Image (cartoon, rainbow, N blue to C red; front, side):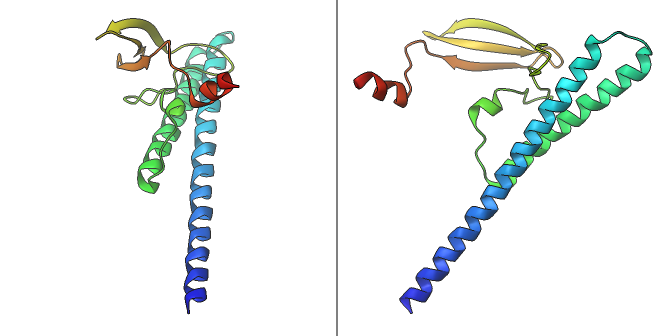
Length: 153
């Protein structure tokens, strides 16, 4: 009887881990798709501007698709109760869901300032499209657990 209960619990854990893995893969795919669509948008803006209206509408549609993909990632993480990594959270505006940095083009959609707030330096990112501010704590003396362990040897 105990062995059957243990086997059932183990199989339930395996099914849950498979489900969680599929959800994280879906989120990762949507994130990569959003950044790819955003890089296409930036690439179109840098090319020669013939047929301005068609290119701008096409760029706007790519930008809209990228924003929808990022919004979908956020909603899926809420529903599935998956914690998003802080590096991912810092790559887009939480108000308008614009990607702040296109990987291939290098065009910035934010302005960066470093301010001293209550004895601690913070990085302030300001979105160019919606003027939303995001503050990120900045500690020069911080060492990660791996850095601390490597210095001990």
